[in-house]
Length: 248
Image 1 (tube, rainbow, N blue to C red):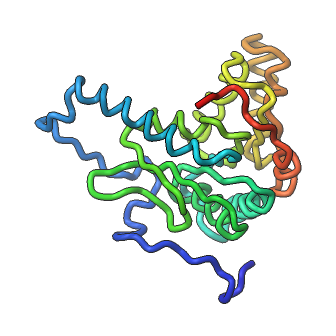
Image 2 (image 1 turned 135 degrees about the vertical axis):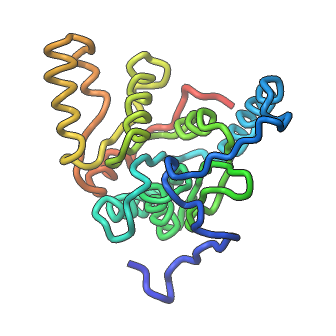
């Protein structure tokens, strides 16, 4: 734990913290009379966000992406495990990519800063400000959730999932589906941290989806590894191979 003398500087931004909330709590602001809401304009805006996102990520060659609940607070178990893992990975030369918000995202970014590594946030863009936690050091903001979602998985060497809600489960199953269908390499580690959370899901997949419904193959259950601590996760992630299935 850093002392007062070594504690990393926390970035200060206008209105800091007011929008650093779970995505489901963000305000919905739309102006149907704005020409930027038209279908034609949205096509160009989407293309621009893809270009900007890829350009931004091209500067970071060795990253691992964190997913998990935005509701965990500093001092809580999974926040501190994510923070520890971020610090361990930063010390091994990895940049930590998160969604830039609170909870597990903030914990991963905080650990990356404390470990002296790249702390990267892919933030949600709002009309007047961004949802961003104070430990993000490099960031890019997105209006479209689906563009941001793709960037969260683009070119990372591995994916780490802490306990979370619908968004975390959505991201986990999407990544596993992309590996299952060979859209991305099966050499990429997918680590699920927290046995109390992930073991019941693994049991459901094994007993109901595989054994009872035959809706997946037995090999699909080997696409991920469940661990219980940051140190266990680090041992699986520290030698994550470079990505060769994405090219800039």
